[in-house]
Length: 168
Image 1 (cartoon, rainbow, N blue to C red):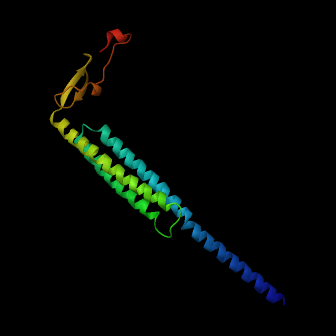
Image 2: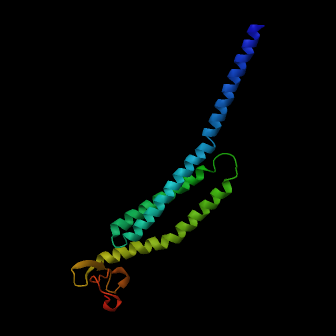
Image 3: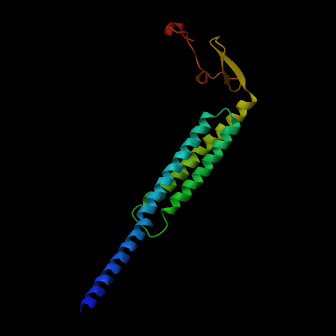
């Protein structure tokens, strides 16, 4: 009788351990896996934004703009791949959100693509027509693209104590 009870107790313990292992496996390959993908997607979207920023900042250096554009395209593709990982498996509550994000990424890419091409074109044009500019007679130089005057690209310096009347 005692052996039967010990056998039932052992079987119950093994069954409980197997159940806990199954729950752990489901958690690791379910919600935990999605959280991991979400963190990777967030980091990748940050890299997309950083590449976009680099293109804008480096608009006068064609090689840098082209490198940033290549990173931008690569990071967008990686974001799409990560986004697709959320749709693997059974349909769940977050799938409509993931599909909406995928559609928004495509709209964003289509909307920014002309700007990226314009930045690359502008960078090539700047390289051909690079002209130095001296500001305020202080020998601090900048540069200006093309022959047109772009005051928004220039740094205006005023001597200390100069007010609005003594403007640049």
